[in-house]
Image (cartoon, rainbow, N blue to C red; front, side, top):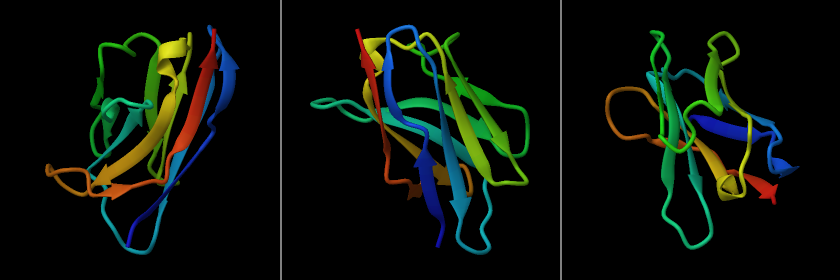
Length: 118
């Protein structure tokens, strides 16, 4: 069973940067696409960014375009999210997720808190 472990969250002032990591492990599994989601208190979970594992293809939500960069290290089975120019509205628990095909994201991490102070 795939296990996803996020790290890199924390408290940062507005305008600052953080880099999140998500490491996948757990025996034999395939990765087609991975993604970052976030959920703020009282809000629904929203998609932040996704990345294909086999080709150079990424997606970003409009709210983070130009500020966040998603990347991956296939050998390490690790995905990253570089977050620059952070805003208080970026405050949320950030989750990583994985899917082995075009279907829904099946495997989820436990989440890491990102707090941006004004």
